[in-house]
Picture 1 (cartoon, one colour):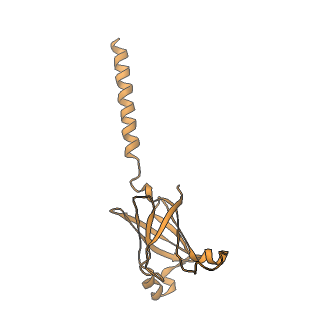
Picture 2 (cartoon, one colour):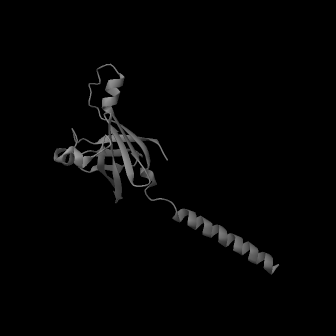
Picture 3 (spheres, rainbow, N blue to C red):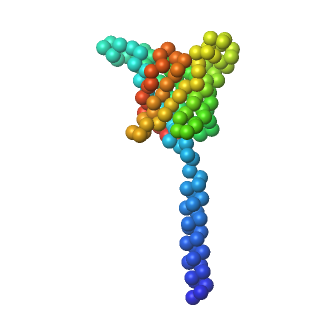
Length: 146
């Protein structure tokens, strides 16, 4: 009887320990990872909806667990690193169209400041490119999760 109690106590202890280990392994930044989509609203909405207009207006951002991102802005590919601090993401562009940003000249480096993003209560993300064509916030929705 005492051996059975010890076995049950041990099983409960192990279950609790496993649950704590699982909770401890949760990534605090998991809400950021995935593919995010936004509308840059650069074209005239009164014009017919076509592929060119959709490409110009499309902003896709993929944030990965390894601290990198990929962004397609109006058909232009940019990649770099992400750091998340106090609920805000800072995306640093390292390459544009697969070329190191330093090779594109000092003008490109000055225009490509850290991008910022913040997750909202409704699960959307407010995204801003302070060095871009316009520095308005773009509301983005997650399209896919890793």
